[in-house]
Length: 526
Image 1 (cartoon, rainbow, N blue to C red):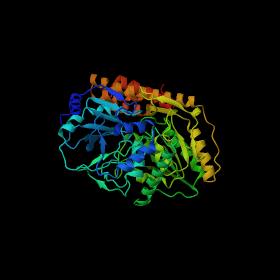
Image 2: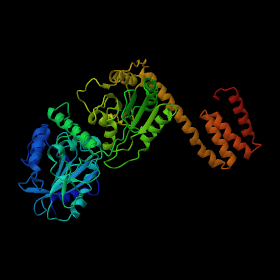
Image 3: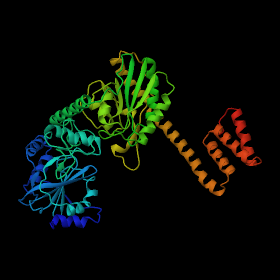
Image 4: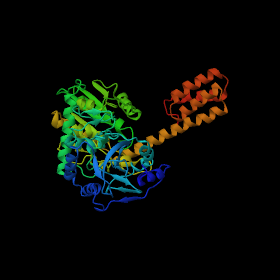
């Protein structure tokens, strides 16, 4: 395996910050790769699908070498994160070259001492892994057969469904599927653990480049995939997990995110919306949706769980309201549950995938001013938050859509939901006045500043304890921290414990007298 490609990979194995990468601009070599690149550049989805429909008839995945008139076939694949690398070689395991798949059939090719990317391909998730390939190629033993199948393994749900599954369902059903963690594998699939088989992503062109609004064929494929996933989930469900809503009961799906691009008022917003809706119904069942697990597993996400707990705590004393968490469930379970809800409120990223695309429920979409993952023509039963009620907040240094959180007055979302419920449930819910979003932002910023000051007070404890680690001094300084945070009741209780250990302490006695006066007057200490 002493080809130029292997030598090149060895040179890169020590790590690199950048590579000499070319951009394909035309039919340079007349190879299969050039033909695929050309179809991808033209966004010719139909021809690429036809290519796959012919290819799946073969046992092996074969292509001509990018620059030599040599027939090569895939003999190994390895996935790093979102990227699938497929290693190609001739019958003697020479003339090695490599395909990288991300969102398209081919995103990058590596041969000799060259790296080419396909037009419009995103290479940033690919480049960090290229320096790992030398050991893979060097250590890979020869095997007799290398039949190919498909992999539906992906770390991001959007790319799993809209770059992999939608095309797989069109042409890949007769090929086995790699039995690795996947968000959704149709029950009819033949699964394999690996062995000598080579697994490729069934990619054509990523949905980010040609979506349902830009191509009638992609719209057909997307909607057919969504319908298949929905039916497959219901057909193979193990029982009803959701509660079927009655006419006088409201069942609502509320999507959250504890990470990037979140509605910053989501906890208090959800609590206030449910409290306002509760008198209009005999009862309310609220499902909180967050992070989704791969098929057949459960995951824990502390950030989403914290949001769920905040909402549940705010509604715990509201009679007739049930709050259930869907955080960490898989898509099959979520689809079965969502089939029972009346409306949804969710962000317009991947968080709305289940209620908007799979189950097609009426609902309200909210987002920052940059992100809308599923542009399409929607019925009047799908409401979108008006941009005049949105203020974006950049998280960190990046202003990319995926990193931008936002402010929205909850009253605006309530009014959109109420409009839907009046149509669906026959209610007569009155709209609320909506405060200016700039006021919402100011209130949020003030609260964040107060919390930061509280954190700083408690951070000062460490230095105080180092100076005097005795128990009375520690309790005294903890009381000071609560005093600065505005919690005089707690400060006084802790200071009383300090006095038990240091009865004659003048500072402790003086602070207790101040606390008692403040609490007797029932005023803030500040």
